[in-house]
Length: 469
Image 1: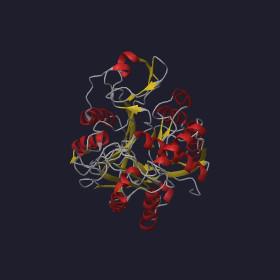
Image 2: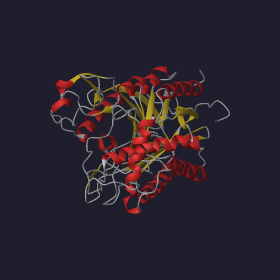
Image 3: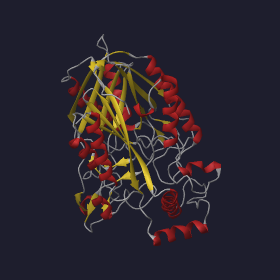
Image 4: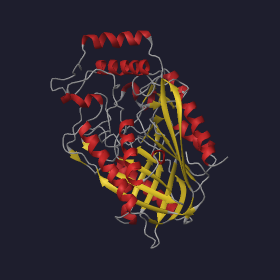
């Protein structure tokens, strides 16, 4: 933690991006137990970095067009940045936009103590080490280039509203259970006539941070919005989805040298599929155009300053891992005893049997809790002038992100989910009572019902510290 209260100083910033598009055959994450080798590139993936400097203090925001980033790779990146460029590790935010049409950085589908799978089926664990190592090194290089590009800039920050592109994805049905509406509709009981109401809100805020150089060019722009990037999923096509499309539109408007970095908010229960339009066809480029137009309107309202205070804080919150119900653990153990190695759903071994994958996931929660009953959850807060950026591991439900924004002592406050390490979903207590994909006990849903409350409380307290409230 920085020892003194930072003072506003002349602001410098640098930005860079490097291509991290995988080669053919690299596994694309986003589906449970399904092998999705990359076959085509719809649009490239990037590691994008912006480094800020003021009064001798530096912080960095790194956004990766990948599905997940694990603690191992965050630590690797932070350590390299500290050694090479002198930034404090806590001043480096590592964020995955969570596009479901990209690989992850690290393994995340089963616990680290889960028995090994054959090397040729490494993807069952969620990722492939060769790609992860490649992307991490490119990310470090991008930060280095951003550091080299530091120049005097002016800062303008604001936000607008765009409520047409994202929707709460938890629909409460006639019997009180929850389904995921949208493209999953195939008629029958999950169709629109079966839905009684949508469980919760969405976050319509589109935040914009613009860095303007002395010649009025825009070397970098940070844009914040909240929605799962799943337009292109589940096709075997590499894509940065709507964050990439939004960035492309902003670069088209402000020049090819503009690095447009997207911070995806607390989107654990937010999708781009309209819940009451069964004929909807996903189009990430359309979403990018709409969001870019809204960002353009915000830009016209901004005032700029060449001075800003920089600060950062990290808080570790101990969150209990839920205990697996005895009958569920017994069920998982029996399945894995019969099939210690993956049971396959097809002769080509491109899909794992659903029951086996569910058992592996449940058993992984048990293994994690046996190793340590509590998860060390990192909340990170950055201050850039009057703007707060909060990094939250995992996929918090949007209700948590909204509560943090409302409780923050500073406006605007932007949320970046999927930072630092893999956690899985962080749902509301009410959602846990109804069940569903995001809350049933699995390795991607393993925390106690109070977890989101603990995250919100910790984040608001941290923001009050950093803004001296």
